[in-house]
Image 1 (spheres, rainbow, N blue to C red):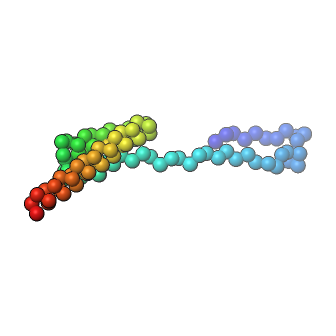
Image 2 (image 1 turned 90 degrees about the vertical axis):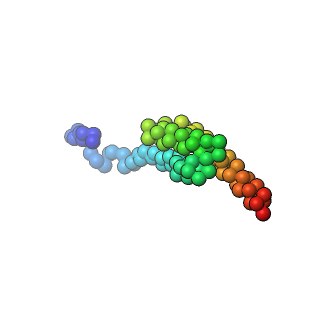
Image 3 (image 1 turned 90 degrees about the horizontal axis):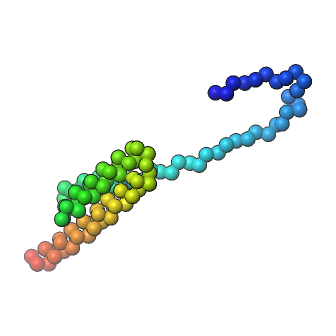
Length: 104
């Protein structure tokens, strides 16, 4: 805390300014998402051509960057993990539709 100084004897409180300056900070932005749980499920249940494993790898890298405070790196790795998860999900849905169609 700053130390307080006594007012000189020739200055009274009535002569002092009555305004107060308040410094406002920007609210902190939410941390970027790492999609770790989604990547884990993609790795365990829909790991077509190792896309789930790659998504999990990028999710872990995003979490490491987030812990270090590098939000731009975490955002980049998290975005890559999200794209890999979406790609693996779409491919798995197409495979399930093909298998159901062939069996039926």
